[in-house]
Length: 72
Image 1 (tube, helix red, strand yellow):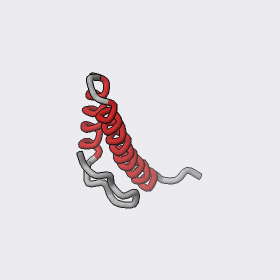
Image 2 (spheres, one colour):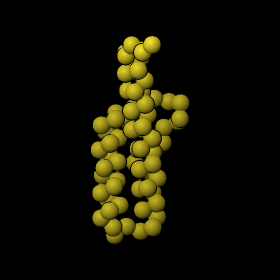
Image 3 (tube, one colour):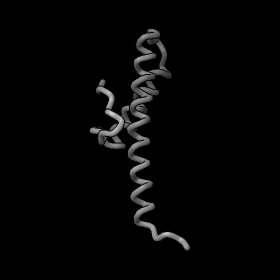
């Protein structure tokens, strides 16, 4: 598992990498059979990955807004 990214730093994972790892975390949590500690660690990792995905989605939204002419 990766270490969390500082809030102001650019993530080292791409959106696609973070999304795929997040999907894997969800699959593992849904499959069950984990200890409480394992489940909590996976949940925390999922939260980190969701933040990375949100970062990239926000950046894409900003780029689209900048490329789109403003309406009067």
